[in-house]
Length: 267
Length: 358
Image (cartoon, rainbow over all chains, first blue to last red; front, side, top):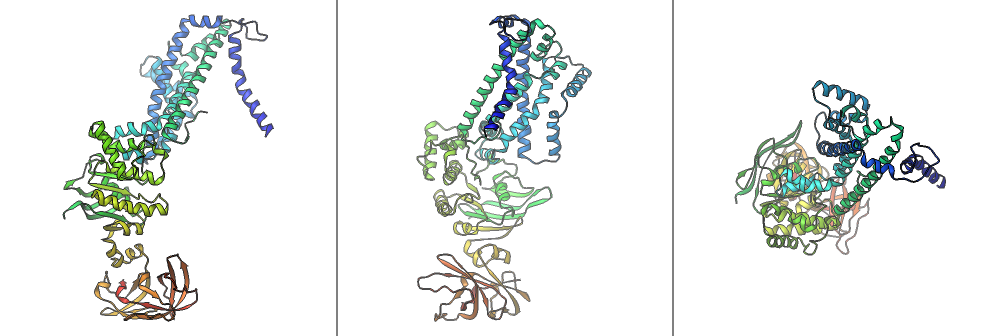
């Protein structure tokens, strides 16, 4: 038992220790990323605040991640509701098609999308990145939301219709509050996937780089490396805060509905 | 009394599967009507067709003189109690019950009054504030009833509402449902596979097999005069003994000898060979020295098996010199002896309650 515990600790340390290096060098007074540390400084964060191109990249990324989360989750709701509620011809094929981007190499998806967009004569922008990211995120959203729908009694919506509501208001009044935890989980996963996705963004972003694309560009200048670390530190803290916030909301939603935990959990 | 609901040649197919095959029936206002049948017989599909969830493939459903074709569930004068109760878990008891009132645009006082009334009616007067997920099975069912009845429908549809409850609670809720139906005076249509439930609660019962109605009758008639062997075997228990018809109602019954039956005792007519159907309470196992009473026939039989059931004992008996097996139920009155398997007993019976089926 103790050896198993030790193994678990070592395993987690191996996974997460490198992340500790981020804040370490972000506050290190020196451009060389190597030990020993030279001294404490917040200069890199100050410089971060003054880098205009980085702000643009950050804003691009947030817009893309937000739009992707919203769109992919909405599409996921349709797919998950249809697959968990109805039987229809070709269902297995349709589900397989939706899930396909999970197993396709991203570089293939990115290249094909680029070719198609150029053939269509569309210019590259953050919205072409959104399209690519939605494609990538819909399988995750569908999988998470299928869990939420699977635990839902189909009679609930029928009961609402029977009591006088229309199809749409039944969904809004009954189904939506009950799949809310799944919606949050799905939106959050899609947001994070989009936020740190590189390959599709690199191919499709044109002159509007996302954060990962901008960071990749900065790696060519060794002197800028500590700034990258400073940015990384902020991103890690933001991600953790986001995760905790979402999990708290999810659990509160579950408790309010008196439901047991039924998938959609991130932790 | 003109019927409130008229079903005319209602059919429903799911692909190649015919769930309903030509259902025709009339259900009166204020009637407690049960749809009884084994699982897969189409009874739930029929209920859902009346509710509007499964529009018929052909045929018409008329409620209160109005053809229901194309009328969605939320526009019908029906409300439903679902098998799972479908209580909204994120709402309180009062919010669940008030759900159907949203569309009526009542002022808060009026809404509050009606919710209180509905909860009172089902005996949940003080539970309005409770969260719906913190209810017991019986309470959930009462909430489902209050929620459906608050809209004052002309028809309440109940889909196996008691099957999820334990036995003691089920008996209690049967009486409760019956009382509620008399109180509100509207038509109840109950789907059940439990014949005791149907017999004890209904004004009339429709027995369904394979998407068709086999018989519609009041409980006593259904039990005493089933129209077919299938109905007789499904509703209550019945022994079937091979018999030959000798003409003019005279039948040679295996193990019991010759009996004479009237025309009305052969619902599907006499045939050369058939079976005699006997309800278990028609046969009496006599205690030693007990008289059979006037006009009763007597047969020697051997006890094959005995099932003691507290207030009654069920015997499986074989008349001497035959392979026929008969079932008899005797009340365990004080002082009445129990017969052991293998014992020889006197069987008293009266052929006027026998039925002949082809």
